[in-house]
Structures are given as structure tokens and as C-alpha cells.
Length: 105
Image (cartoon, rainbow, N blue to C red; front, side):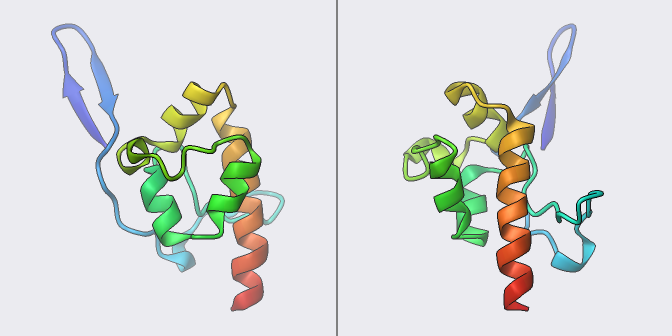
């Protein structure tokens, strides 16, 4: 994520592409859920890296995963548009990915 300096404040600018996180370096919370997805990640990247996440996002009410905006909109921004709590959505997606991806390995 890049910071842009305005005349009096600094704000975050989303849309910057990042690399897929290395699975061995992911944070793990107290419930054993790995942090595959973070609020600042681009929806399109999430779907590309973790295709199964699309189903979970749709079940959360985010049917915009195929929308062109998903290529530069962060999870946090998409949640704001849909009136969802980004921490809750990220937790549900991460829980699902932890269960499914860990089972495959």
C-alpha cells in the first residue's frame, strides 16, 4: 500500500498489487486461523491466489467478485460499499482457507 501526502494529511491509497503471501510466514490467531487474507488486499488478487475464497465472499454478500472494480478495490473498500465489517469477513474467509488449504497439505 502506498501513502499519498495531501496538504495536511496522509491517506492510504489502495489498488497497489502485492505478492501472494508465503504460507509459512502467515500470522496465526488464538483460534489457529491463518491470516491468508488482510483488509488491504485487492479482491482480484484474493480470488486469483485463493479461488475458493470467491464462494465465501459471495456467501458474505459480496457478489462483486467478477466486477471490474474488484481488480483494484481492496477487501476493506468492498466491505464498506456493501455495509459489512471487514474484520468479520476476513475472519470467515481466513477460517475457510485455513481449513481447506491445511487439509490439502
